[in-house]
Image (cartoon, rainbow, N blue to C red; front, side, top):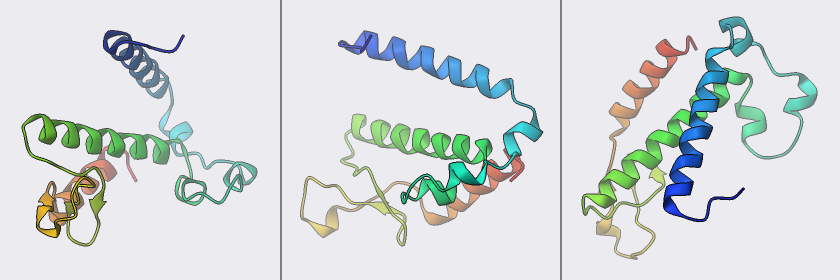
Length: 126
């Protein structure tokens, strides 16, 4: 059933997250690092077909999206208008609701992104 209220959405998200973590915890390191079959990797033209080579890559990608959404929601709830997508060259986001280029808001400097990546690589043995 598709959630139609905030409480249903939160419950569904929580249940799905629990399912994902239980599934992930069931994999051995060998299974998590096992390369996907070539037939699966040639599935389409989108970037993820070339980027994600194994389950670990997919989980890291999901984790980074989770971090992106968490930072975005927290900043906006705190009253800091923050755009969703990171400008990779400057470590800032650009709010889509304004054309004012001075409205760029720093969310995570590039150095912090590198530190975060090192944390993930050590955590997931990249």
